[in-house]
Length: 110
Length: 114
Image (tube, rainbow over all chains, first blue to last red; front, side):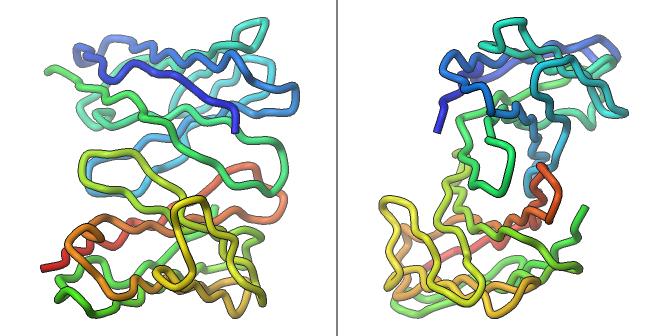
């Protein structure tokens, strides 16, 4: 599996934007970039995914570098409920297993 | 997305015993997976549950310790056998639906072995 690298932890003030980076320099042309987050005492939940173009949904935006070797998850206004571990993972389109890296623990400061 | 019911949500077990964890999905899914999450750690894939055939295990995990069943497209079980305190972890079921790139996770089973 292609590997992703994320900072172990980040902090953000409440109601400010948060940019969570992910490096995936060995990404292949068919790998989708997925982001999941894990709230305390819960299983991971889907946030967003993309292939080449930037993506927006109600939860977040995903900015993908032109060479696809990195991506950034953008939370436009962090709330206390966004405090979680955020995982960036790669998955080839289709029915495949996925493996998790260490993730970024986001702390939101009121 | 699929809705997963994972049972039990938590249990405290004696060493040497076994626990079976159930994962029930509200709709048919293509792929089912089992993960382990040790305290303060990320998720580690144990195996892919295959319908009607033996599960596919990741390196470091064996069928004798973690037998898995998947009798149909909506249900799977993971058994943690001959437990020791090192098996104390959260065990999570995950599924992927047909025509979906996303994965849904259960809320997990918190296992403590004493």
